[in-house]
Length: 373
Ligand code: TXA
Ligand code: MG
Image 1 (tube, helix red, strand yellow):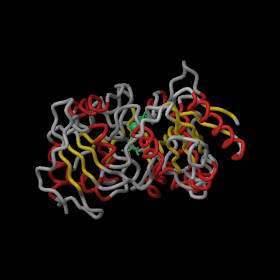
Image 2 (tube, protein in one colour; image 1 turned 120 degrees about the vertical axis):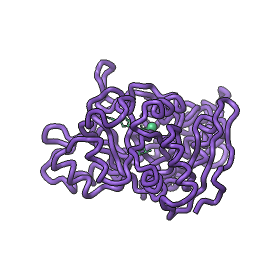
Image 3 (cartoon, helix red, strand yellow; image 1 turned 90 degrees about the vertical axis):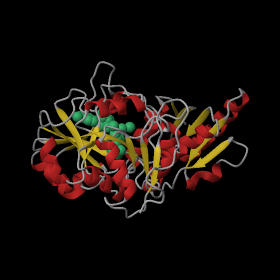
């Protein structure tokens, strides 16, 4: 059920000519919901509509329609050599847009679809707008595990290109309010299905030779992949060590990403020295007029009593990395809302659960500002 009428609520901004509709949907929504049907109708007319997935909100457009896909790049301000992920309602539609990926990929799809895993496959020539793949011979595809996303994909019965629904370079949106803050007035509508469960984007993988390469760490961990692929080497991309002349295999990896407006500095080291270093950095920043923030975890909150920073946020629990992933992007946006200009962040363990994906996003958000305590 949609809690609003079919015309949606006007939440348009003032800087562009779009009226942005919004449909609030129930957690168990299906493709017969009037809001979902209206959103699907707009997609098929070539408009852009944001929708929730289990990872982050996506900005959808008909992947077969070049004009529609152009609208994604325009709304986001996204560099046009960065290709988009295509979303499908189910695996049955895969053969229409991609060529077979082989045994390793089939095994992954058996286990992880629907879910936060994107596979890069040879594109079926002519099936999609060339703007989706940014000229590459491959296409990135996933079936999301979110009832509202699946309802929309079923109602549209079309492959839907969907990057994260943020302005390019900003933290990905994990709620409809985040999408609104970035894109109201620039897109046709937003399906509001509440907050996202995973909180970080999908894992992007590609089978290369006999190995599986992780092009972007995400909701499915390397350990998850290894568990279901005995005997297949699973290779994590070392994206932050790429030299300027090297071409990253996932083109999106070379852009500034996930960044709050304030400058984010990561502080690595043992917990005690890290907290000590952050407290002294905060004092130094405050002394030169910065509005300061600290990003920590529930277990370490006591190390930053009131007065050390203007804004202190505990982003999940170290003991449960999934909670960190779920809250990370919202926390980065909260610093922006509070006008914080200088943020110091602790690190979490990269070797467990989604820790690798969390640290990948934090490193990118820091743009290389990393201190060792
Ligand atoms: O969880 C997610 O994946 C979200 C939700 C909305 O599904 N989508 C998302 O899309 O994060 P986007 O466009 O923000 O990220 C797509 C990533 C980029 O790093 C891009 O370079 C890579 O996937 N990619 C897309 N097509 C590719 C291709 N053909 N080969 C290699 N990498 C590709
Ligand atoms: Mg993105």
